[in-house]
Amino acid sequence: MHTFEFVRPADSAAAVATAAQANTAQQGADVRFVAGGTTLLDLMKLNVETPARVIDINRLPLDKIEARPDGGVKIGATVRNADLAHHPTVQREYAVMSQAILAGASAQLRNMATTAGNLLQRTRCVYFRDTAMPCNKREPGTGCPAITGTNCTLAVLGTSEHCIATNPSDMCVAMAALEATVHVQGSKDTRAIPIGDFHLLPGSTPNRETVLEPGDLITHVTLPPPVAGSRQVYLKLRDRASYEFALASAAVVITVEAGNVTRARVALGGVGTKPWRSPEAEAALVGQPVNQANFRKAAEAALRDAKPQSQNAFKIELATRCLTHALQTATA
Amino acid sequence: MRDNPQSGSSNLTRRAFLQTTGGTAAAAVIAGYSTSGQSASPAEIAAGPKIEGAVPITLRINGKDRQLRVDPRTTLLDCIRETVALTGTKKGCDHGQCGACTVHVNGRRVNSCLSLALMHDGEEITTIEGLGTPDALHPMQAAFVACDGYQCGYCTSGQIMSAVALLKEPCGPDDADVKELMSGNICRCGAYANIVAAIQQVRKNP
Image 1: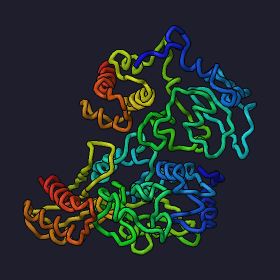
Image 2: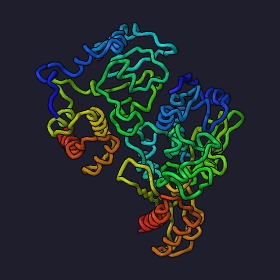
Image 3: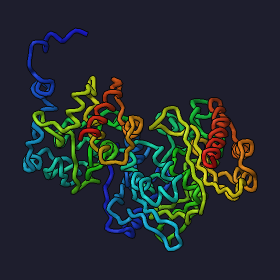
């Protein structure tokens, strides 16, 4: 691990001011915030991340879950994943997020990992994690060996000729289906960013994963008021029963009246280069009767633009069945 | 495999053997601190080797304040093992994948390999040495012995720290619930069935 200066700011403004001196907030940043450390320390040991300064935000007052006047909920940046998943309001009103978080990582990691850290979780692509290999995300312009190499766990949606790395988060998939908003305090202003706009597609700049700029500190995430009568399911499929990243996952928030779908929010995990909301599946569901054929049609719509690589074509059918099954489970 | 004839007839423990023969460089590093772990006084530690760029912190480890100076890169795991010389906590993968390094921070289980020691200034750390003693085992330690919840023992301290934390977490009654919440602790020997039995024994008869 490279040497670095460890900084503990007195307040958020001081944290932002220090971070604003960074060259970038994306891959290669020379200043990093640390909260849980579960992604950052892992990558610093691999020399994938080599910040000169690390800002500890754990003592900032960003660790609360609060009800909002509009009936929604405000989740602080440093709320631990375990506390979020077990919060009574979240379990009752936003069950899909509780299920998604508890489907990820281990109990130890969930005690450490935070809301903001999970939003910024990095891909598990083996080429990104190995500095002996080329990687356009880690070193722009060096190429993507995954496209001709080991890609069975990588993405089929949102890929480009420069990067096919999967976003590994479960929490973010649930947040996409719940239409969360990410709140950022920057050096000039504060911003509210819809979760769908927060992560970027790789395109020709896979080193840029989010819209964050130097100095931007995620302070909290808000969820809109719960949808009355909605049913929620997170279904995760993986190579082993626990403690593994998704090969395909689906987050479903669906409302049914008189046997017809009146509202649907659908997002996929494990198959996209970002948490993958599917307006195509949602449009295919709304107004249709609840039955397996319609669910299958909606799932096929979600995967219509999927592009398989040499080893991961199975993910298209797996994700289709995953979403179909999640919709059946939610409406059963 | 046959026993090593050189160690077969001796009562020497592995740790004592390493401490007396483990090379002058390692001995010199350890000499500044204490090789007996629990008995190291803050004064002894403060008098340890000077590390360039080291930062002073206080960790309350197993109920005892430790005033330390650590390189900012030092993980909580390396601090516990190398700086404080409490070697019950193990380093397996060093990347948060195996759980051998599990300790409690303020009563909650964490992977100490993915955390910087500096992040825990002033916090309460519990390691396997803080759970029980050979004469008065923690009920979970006793259950692991009774149920044979290990073979080589390398993952065991992490397993036990995880299991003790699990007792205070939301966990359903079934073996499957225990397995799910213990999935962050890998046992290469495959003692899982007995580990689950040990945990269930303590949950039923705490």
